Length: 299
Image (cartoon, rainbow, N blue to C red):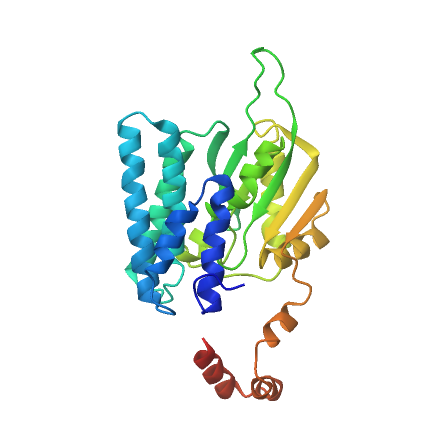
């Protein structure tokens, strides 16, 4: 489906932004009016127009907060967080300072929004090899007035993204709907994702069970704090995460359920389906120079 843009990638990313309307991460009118200002297939135009919208909504959030309109402020901060993420998406030069700056604004707006969540929210750091993986823990608040009552143990949804999603975006995809259904949620970024690649420069790895296992260890070591029903741990992977989560679940047997959204049955086939036959032949022949040249052109 093409929406406003003929460029399929621009159309897809616009749809992705609009999809977050369901949990207050976007407004359809704001998204469409931004899209109509963008020049077709122009990365700079994409960044500039989404950044303008993000900045305007960010200002609106601050004004709402100043006058005590906390719900409106929360919703505006969520939208601004998403719009900054969308703006940064097509910055492909890792040395472009706007990438980190805009990504950090997205994170800052999200943290501001969480100050007004009805659930319990906690940023976490998960030990992983020699570093810490960033994460967020979302907990359903127990409405009971009995302070001495033991806190209810709940199932938990552990969620990670794929190739280009951010930690904050996982709230709209997974945490918000999980909380509504009585699940606590732990969202995290692994190697190659979000802040781990942007700030720590640690790339992806294929053996994703080596990433998920420390996360499950962390949960079980802190099961009282996280009100964990230990036999009810679900893992959800989004986009490329649909491959990564499947790989992890094949080796990490403490997972009770696995959700692949989307499922990637054959990553090699998915990539090759978009390659011309001449490129596939060069890959088979091991012609590194031709392969790299053609892929650079396609990019």
